[in-house]
Amino acid sequence: MTLKNGSFLTLLDYSAEEIEYLLDLAAALKAQKKAGIPHRVCEGKNVALIFEKTSTRTRCAFEVAAADLGMHPVYLDPSASQIGKKESIADTARVLGRMFDGIEYRGYGQERVEALAKYSGVPVWNGLTNEYHPTQVLADMLTVREHFGSVRGKKLVFMGDARYNMASSLMIGCAKLGMDFTACAPQKYFPPKDLIAKCEAIAAVSGAHLCFETDPSAAVQGAHVIYTDVWVSMGEDESVWKTRINDLEPYRVTREIMAIAGVQCRFMHCLPAFHDLETGIGLDIYQKFGLTCMEVENEVFEGESSIVFDEAENRMHTIKAVMAATLAEGLQAAIQA
Ligand code: CP
Image (tube, rainbow, N blue to C red; front, side, top):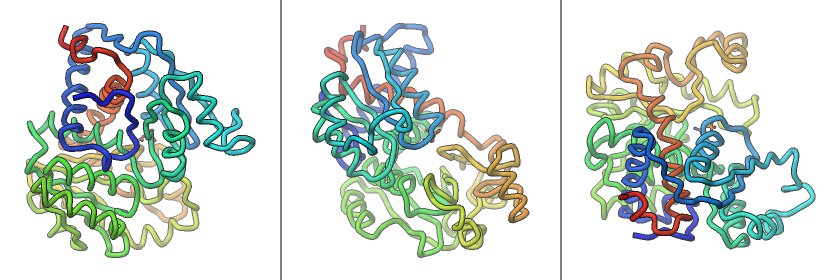
């Protein structure tokens, strides 16, 4: 298996075997890290990290993973660069491609990360676009594997706003790897119809079942994972809060919902989460709407079934696998040594 010189823009571009290879590689690199075994398989390379939107996990994961692989990461904050203001994505790509061995992009439309890949001539990795968040789903799948032994045949329920990058990418990942996927939301919050059609065709091959359910109690029966995300995505206006809260309150992940799912069920969230009043936005929501949590109750977030910090750690190991797989020479021999 070689993914060398390829980009990682959406899981739609990757076969089940390629995704499983990345998960195996991430697990091997994680074991090496835990054992203190160096794995500088990209020694001397340089990578650019473009963030047009804020980040904690993704940025730190790319920076730490790059350093562990022997690379030098350069963080590009658009407020301090020419991207999008004085220079197009295509021109930026042609400049960065002359200096760097790989480029990470977090920002707006998928067409921007695709243009970077088209014009730079080096591997480009999607750190989140409006449409997809593929590195998050790799981390999620590694976490499911660690807790359940395998992904195939398990059931993941996404509760909340299923129209955007997170639910879309989970649906693709589940369909590819043979994991059952349920989107549980009001009908108008279901994933895009064209993507559902693509995923149903993929699921017909892998054996995954895709469901779209409006009733939370029916959706979560027998779930191995209940997954949720914030109700307002990055870049959306505050004016949508009221409608979103009214529409999505029945889809909050509560202790009752976890109990209906069963003791086997684990709680996952890509983070950051609004589960208490310890953040500026949390306090703001409390003052405007009287809510002490949003998409998940604090008792679930902090409870024994919550594996959100395993998931967050795995961002680093899986992002490392993506960079190593697309950049390193003689990777397999280096990992086995
Ligand atoms: N889950 C995730 O992408 O986190 P950040 O926004 O902190 O990178």
